Picture 1: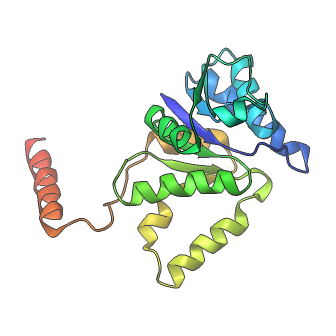
Picture 2 (picture 1 turned 180 degrees about the vertical axis):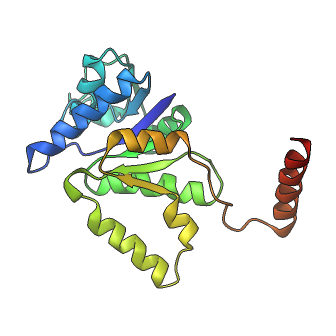
Length: 205
């Protein structure tokens, strides 16, 4: 199993962000989970990679040429792939990962996880998306997500497909049990087919 980790290239304003990123990397490695991330040695990106590597884990970095040329690439990774651009980076991370974990970060971090969450809603993949809510960092974000539900812009099923917890063990356990909801805009025929398959499975058990 490999998990993609989206997180900041900065360290944030309190040490617990870096400490949590490092600890998550160690935990993943100890559970035999490989990590895929943006490839940098700076900020929380570097911390999560260093934590995994210190525990003997496998870490793959995916970095666009423009950033690699600025010498922010981590030189101690299991594997570093240098790709042409940001779009290729995101595509490659999605190909390698079986789930997506978000640690504190800025606009780029949020853009990456929201894209994967949107794709999951559309049924383009069935991989879990989660947030490690270090020091309540994502509390305002989830208040906004709740607002989208209460205002009628999102079904609750799609909000609840996100895993959000302060505990990394709980996050990984919920990823292991994850079952995706029905995709958005599924045709009636597809719904009937899915229901028939489920009934056939139940009858055969």
